[in-house]
Length: 317
Ligand code: 13P
Ligand code: SF4
Image 1 (cartoon, rainbow, N blue to C red):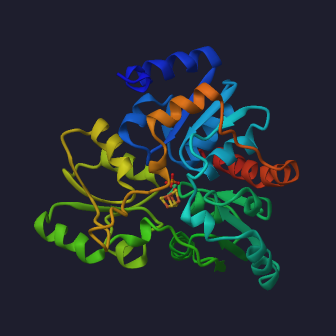
Image 2 (cartoon, protein in one colour):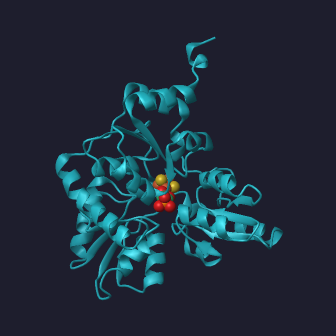
Image 3 (tube, helix red, strand yellow):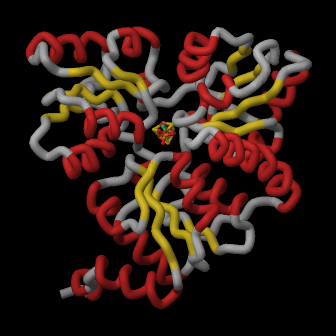
């Protein structure tokens, strides 16, 4: 038997966590086995808040790079590890710093609000960061006549624009998972299960948002299934969240919304799914790959993230 086969990854990870004073923070889009070994599971906002408050010396991020970078920016003295550096984000990739500088120049006099799904460079160019949990509330907290640039998700941007009626110029980026849900396939399920409620992440396109019974961030969708008296849900976000929905309300039925191309498996985030138990084990053992952010960018990016945390705290989010 090979050495690899003999390792009990879960107990070894537990042992190393205690020995190294490390915590594992996992996003809801991670696979169920990884969510089960995490010290804390959450959406982007909750994970940032947890990273900022942890007393651990090492934060291992079971998520994607922009999330681990945000943790590093908030806790520069801690060691932040990401088990696979290729765990990127198509949305963050859709907004390059050089293009964004030009976009800001072309739209002068506007407050720049960027979604947390951005690189550290984009955060450093922003006035306030937001997540899907607090975006609408953050924008509503600003004076009504304040002109805004929102980046990089056009669907979330349009959703915020509709909700707030504010003057917002939107960067045309998108997420390859949330743009792929098929309205037609969702409606086929809805016909089959008329009592099903359609719950949708705001990164989805307008036609899918229009048929939603509820729109919200991953944590808001989870809370909705916990409090709502329905029994069946068609879930239009990355299917990883269904693990927590099943854990908290096991007697309900959750149907992952199908993608436009039924052969592509693209309702799963291929970046999130790069993180595996074996990679977490190796990462914790070797304490690498480690996240580093250029000092100047880190200092600039810290301000808009802290602003988000302060506004969120004030609003009780
Ligand atoms: P949340 O803000 O709901 O965690 O979403 C993060 C994300 O990557 C959505 O695709
Ligand atoms: Fe990025 Fe989309 Fe994956 Fe979220 S689901 S991490 S936005 S690629």
